[in-house]
Image (tube, rainbow, N blue to C red; front, side, top):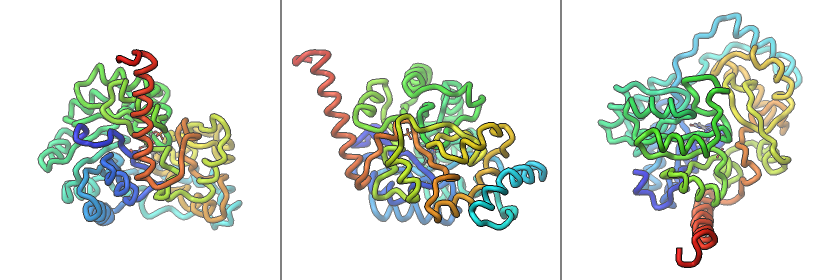
Length: 355
Ligand SMILES: Cc1cc2nc3c(=O)[nH]c(=O)nc-3n(C[C@H](O)[C@H](O)[C@H](O)COP(=O)(O)O)c2cc1C
C-alpha cells in the first residue's frame, strides 16, 4: 500500500481541524489522505468513507482513537467542573451540566470500519487486540499503528500491524502514547524513526515536525517509507479551524508551542494561550481524557464563536511557522516537488555532480 503511493506523503488525521474533504483532495494527488473519524458516529463514519470513495478511487485511511469507555468517579467530574466554572462565566455560559456521553464509543466505530472496509485504517491512543487486527486483515484493510516509543512499535508489530506511524515529540495535537508516561515517551522524530526502523521489520511512517519538502526528504533518508504531515495543512483551504485558531497560527511568534493537559486531559501540543498558562500549576488535578475534553467542549465553542483564542485548543506542532495556505492538493504536490528538489540538491552538494 505505501509502496504503491505516487507521493510518499500521508496527510495526518486531524480531528477538529479537517473533514473527509481534505482526504479526498490529498488522495487524488496520489498521496495518502486521512479521514479523522474519532469524533464520528458509526453512521457518519460510513457516510464519510462513502463520500471519499465516490470522489476518488485512490487509497485513503480512516483514523480512530482506541479508548476504553470512560466511567469517571463523580468527585473527579465535580472537581473538573469547579476548575472550569470561572472560565464559563467569563464566556457567559450557564453552570455546566454533565454531558450525555464522554466520547463516541470505540467498539461501534470499529465495527463500522469493518463494515465499510476503507483501504487503510490508522489508530492512536491505544492498541488493538490481535483478533481486531486479524478482522481488519480479513477485510483487506491496511493497518497502521501509532507509536511514540520503540516498545509501542514492537507491540503493534506483535499484534499484526502492517505499518508503524513513528510519532515524534514535535507533533501537533495529541500523540499516541499508550505504554509509558509522557516524559518517558518524549522522543524526537529523528531518533524515534531511526530506532523503530532498526527494531521493527515493518514500513515506518515518520510524523512530527515535518512541514516542508526538506523535512519530507529527511524523513525518507531516515528510512521512513512515507512522511506524515499534519500542521503544515492547518491553513489550507480544506482546513476547518476557527478564525482565532487560524490567526494564532498566522501570527505565531518563534517557538510558540507547549504541551498541555488542560484542554482535553491528555497531553497535546498547541500554541500557548491564557488558559494553558493559568492551568499549568494545576496540570496534575485535571480530569483525564476524554472527561476534560468533553467538559471543555462547550467553552471552546463559545470562545471560537466570540473570536477569542483564550481557552481554545490551538493544536499545532513545533514547525508551525511552516504552515502554508492554499488547496490541500496543491500543497501536497508542492511539498513533494520541494522534497525531490532537496534530495537532488543535497546529492549534488555532498556526492558531487556524478553522485
Ligand atoms: C489539529 C490536530 C489534530 C490531530 N488529530 C489527530 C487525530 O484525530 N488522530 C491522530 O491519530 N492524530 C491526530 N493528530 C496528530 C497528527 O495525526 C500527526 O501525527 C501530527 O500532526 C504530525 O506532526 P505535525 O503536526 O508536526 O505535522 C492531530 C494533530 C493536530 C495538529
